Image (cartoon, rainbow, N blue to C red; front, side, top):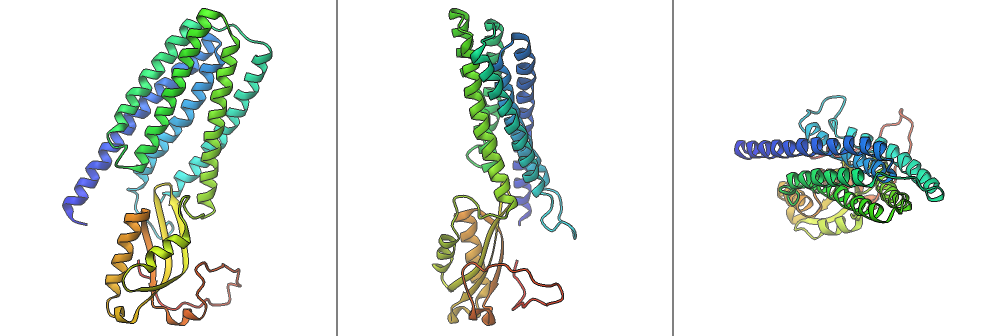
Length: 321
């Protein structure tokens, strides 16, 4: 990579990191205010929204950590670096907030049967303050939300927080003028369901990545067909596509090239790598070309088998990175 482009990428990452840090600070202040305010006002809706903010605060922190981890060098013992720690943290976060959602729903059901008085005016003020900080955090991330998937995901989290704050604000106004305390429990249940769905999605995504699943929305057959459509590619087999972390996708495959391109392997490799990056955001590839002995059995997806360590495995050629 050219020196100029490397410096530009570094400045871009620093800009994003600074905006994430600002958004994290604002979201943390919102979390503390809503926890204290929920206890003071006896509003389960505020406490539920605080749990929702906690989920998104953790997501923001993970996004910032992902940027930091990307700068850590690989080593002999960690050939993929530290990127997978993001996935483990996501799983732990999702499981924790999932349990929080169950507690919120349990408490909300109890309040449906026995509504509790709520201090509506402080509830309104604290939720309004949360809305302001959420909008400030969203504005900090909006600039890069169209350029980076990581930022866009965090931006949508903050916008979701803002929407939840609007619901609590409306609830505070209605409770103040009607005295309908049951609405606090209803709002809590709604926010609890949102948290439940969000945390379940985080758990599913983390488990899918840890199990080396094909990235969601991607098909091995479609990717293989895309590669077969490139000049010089005759067939693709033994294809594997997986996710290293939420923003790095990898692919390995055996590729049979046409006879007229036998002396132009580098050209075929570059074309495949460029297409995979541009079309599928696959940035880490291992492509093995013209492995003739393997042509006897060439399924698109090769099943893995357990073999004794004493038995050597057949390797046709070295891999190209």
